[in-house]
Length: 407
Image 1 (tube, rainbow, N blue to C red):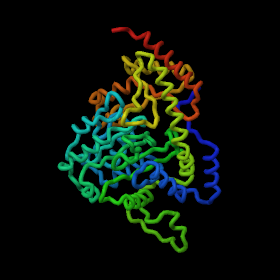
Image 2: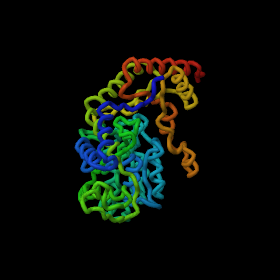
Image 3: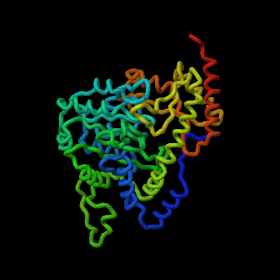
Image 4: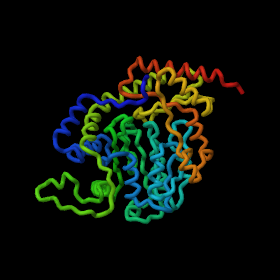
């Protein structure tokens, strides 16, 4: 069975983790701080905070900005539940909007229609590693500053809607000569086990706030918020006579460990030169094979302004329904190939349906979802395995669509 997305951990990463385990310092410490600096250098943003998940990063930024009951956050209906859940955690209202028909990303026109005086944050999602239309989204945040109602010092300082990018998929992607992480106010990456670059679990907040914000000062504030509200971390407390600390707020527990950071530092070393090239090569093989078939709608992952980091290959099958897509997936599995679907849209989930959301209000989202099959893309997927995936997909699609009655 070809798996869908197993992690690739090389011997150097194993050795570095062993060094951490032998060092006597396994929680947040020097390697985490080094990883933050290396991520900032790589992305070209202003400061970076590493945490235990992207979800924690999104929520801590909502809370830092003062998002609360009565506020609205605009986000795509086509995303993973975490993007909506963090808004609910803060007591605010998720305002889902539909996506583009060509690239799965949030529609700028639909964002604009959804902006109200209650809008505090726009949260675009870089689906599959392909960046959203950030110039247009950033421009919308500025365009509607006159109706923005600031309630906290952070909101007054920014003076407009905050753009908080869910960049969970897009570490290493490019948009107009800038990397993800430096494309808007704040971007949040995921380093979960299935991501291109992994720390087993983990994530990072890439701060890129405009003046007069001091991003380093915001970083220090976030360090306190994400470690119980404690004004010193464990590393600082090991200095001679420096044991005393204070709790300055009721904070959270979201810190990354040095064990995780050790894996990330090694993965970052070969990310551009090796990981992304392998993933791009897999995409190119899929494109070459499926472009010969009328039923295949290939994903957009590169154009004159954008380059994906090749996280997902979301193949869509033309002219089918959800009930026809699912048997295709079963057939592919019967050929010993694992595939997936990204994602079941959030408004289709029971919790959100009970809140009154209805997928029929997001027709493009549903159409994309109903026809989408995510194919395996990972470091150790060799050319022979790719051929096996291609063969399985072609045979499975053609077997199922042959049985669909013509209209």
